[in-house]
Image (cartoon, rainbow, N blue to C red; front, side, top):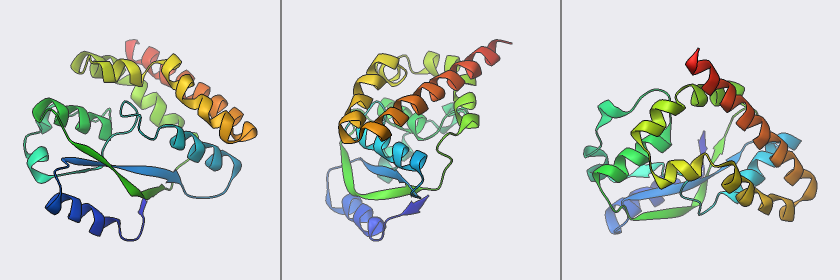
Length: 178
């Protein structure tokens, strides 16, 4: 990940001068290939979708209340967010105007398989509205239809990529039972 210039100053300012507990930082894939551009448009569709996006920056007081022993290696920043919500409700969340640029494979099959493998455990730990919506195919498609309005070719690629994500996620889920 690469942070946009000035983001650390902004985040420290939030922590010192505001009533926000956490900050969501929007993501963009670095690079201009067709698939990377499609993924960037996908991420635009998730802006203000708190079931999909999770904060990447927290005030120390929030993180001190998190039960770090409950966080498994199967998940990423969303699990930290769900634990923080449990220990410090209700969190006041802000979204930064700055970005994080991801240096990532636009089709990270291993990540989706990994998430699928840990899904059962994750769902049992966090059986909440956030988790149900996070993994709802219908909800994702609803969000991703925005991509078709942004650009038809990229929007179609977004839908194909998301279908592949779900496919590999479910293969990971099946493998966890074997």
